[in-house]
Structures are given as C-alpha cells and as structure tokens.
Image 1 (cartoon, rainbow, N blue to C red):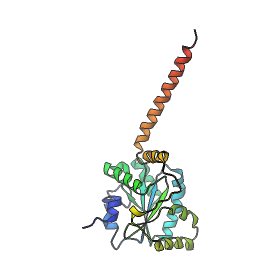
Image 2 (tube, rainbow, N blue to C red):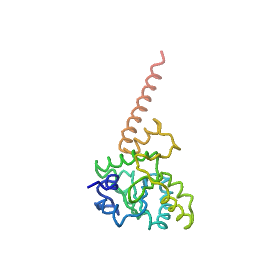
Image 3 (tube, one colour):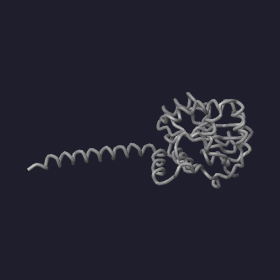
Length: 221
C-alpha cells in the first residue's frame, strides 16, 4: 500500500490540540474528511510578524474552512510556548513540534528544506487530495483580502491553479537563498544551536576584551 502523502510529509501523527499524543495522520487526510486545500503555516510564538499575521489567518480560515485545512508547523522551542500560542489563536491542525522528539525534529527540518522556507511566517498551499504544490505566496495573498467575497475568490483561484508535484515546484525566488540565508535557516531550524553560537560569541568577545586590557597595561615603559 502506498504511503499517504500527508503521513510522508507530516509524520505518523497530527495534532488537533496541544498536550495530546495526536491522531494518525492518514485518518485526517486522503479520506472523506479531507478538505480540498491544505495550507502549511510555518510560524512561532517568539516571532513578532507571526503574532501579527496569525489573527488575519484565523479570520481567513473562519471564512473558508469548508474548503481549507491549516496545519501549524511550529518553530517554538518548548511545550509551554507552543501550547499557549497554539491554543490561544489556532483551531488548526499541527505537526508534532520539533522539541517533542528527534523524529519530530528531523521531520521539521525535512519540511523546511522541502519547501525552501526562508523565513516565518510562511504559508504554503497544497492540493488536499494529492499533496501537490499550489503556491508559497499565500501569506501575501491572504493579507490583501479583506472581505468575504475576496477571500472566497482567493480560495477559488487556488483551486483553479494547476497543482504540481512538490519535487517539480518552483518556489518563490524573491529572496536569494545564498550562503548567508542558508546559514540563517540552519539556525532557525535548529534553535538549540543558537545557544552554542551565543556562548562562542560571548567567549570570543571576552577574550578580545582581556587581550586589549593586557596590551594597554604592557604598552608603557
């Protein structure tokens, strides 16, 4: 039996609310309960632009939820931050957060790499039946629609757009994915390394400060 596209992408379990063990991913996607569209919401509680955009996304979802599922892909670093943010603002599905296990962390890295995530918040829209790619510009499009008619029209435009397999998708090239951006995303997707980098920088600055003091004290004859 072929692996369900959502299980392959999200992992074996999907959350419907925080602080639970989740339900089998394949039970939520690919069957009669599947929506026509699935939007991946890459976000985190510590991200100010995310906090500004999340209420807009919620409003959009409430207008279009008959055709749309949203899956929250969190970059939060601990259970409390994740749960508070998820429970307060989002009646969405969610992937297992990266801090939950090594398997979840690897799944998160894989998703970010697959969709070439350059920053958050980002919204990726997929075909709900096949998991094929539709757009990675959804955040900008959602921010432009302000009334019920325009929201429905946006969903209709996604449904009419040709969905392509993810490995054939052309992702937004508005931002260069050069060495600096790759380095930035490396740390975004592996937040524990940020503390190591901070420690190294702090120690380096301390060493330079001590070196400067030694030179000033030894410079006089």
